[in-house]
Image (cartoon, helix red, strand yellow):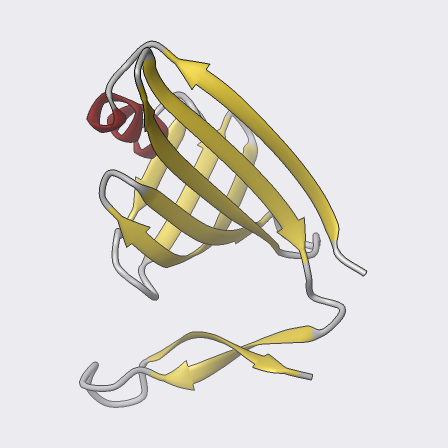
Length: 124
């Protein structure tokens, strides 16, 4: 079973403008730091609350998928899809927790130097 929340918004802005808003400070959290490549770090901070994780995929300005979690909470996967519309951009947000069938592990990153590890998903 997968726990999932899905929402869609129609925004009166171009995909590039929506991308800038969702990857910058203010929309996902007060402070957002994203290294926009697979395996890149992700940090989201609002007041005293912080979530950290990693970027799974970033296709500018069409799709962003990342994993995040606050300390002591299970990780969730967030997927943001931007679809051009005649009147703006449709933003689809899906947050899911499929970790019943997947384990998050650290695997060596190719070409990253000695002993650096990044996230990877493997079937349990």
